[in-house]
Image (cartoon, rainbow, N blue to C red; front, top):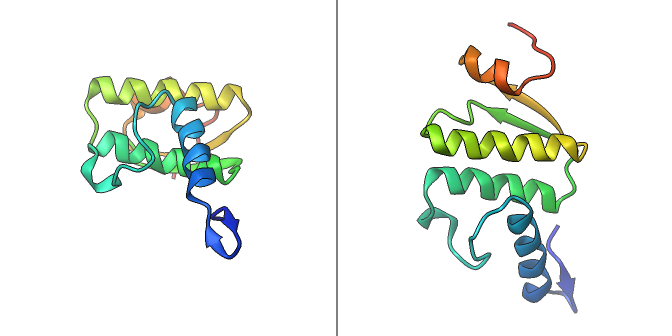
Length: 110
């Protein structure tokens, strides 16, 4: 939900909340930057930050590494581990069994 003040969007509060979540994920991205100008990995991380701003307790990640390189995948896994340690839950959908072995606590095969 957007922060409101007097019926208008409170951009200062919105940007402060966005900055806090981006920083939580270790991202150096201005909340005023257009998402479409970011690389795919950064776009995905912004989506995670948006969910965190809404206090999501569960994230569903469907093939999150499909467009990522090795270094970007490791950064994503580092962020997932950090958020798991903070109590966040994930449904991680992938056909890459090596990734699942690295990141999952439990596995369901369908």
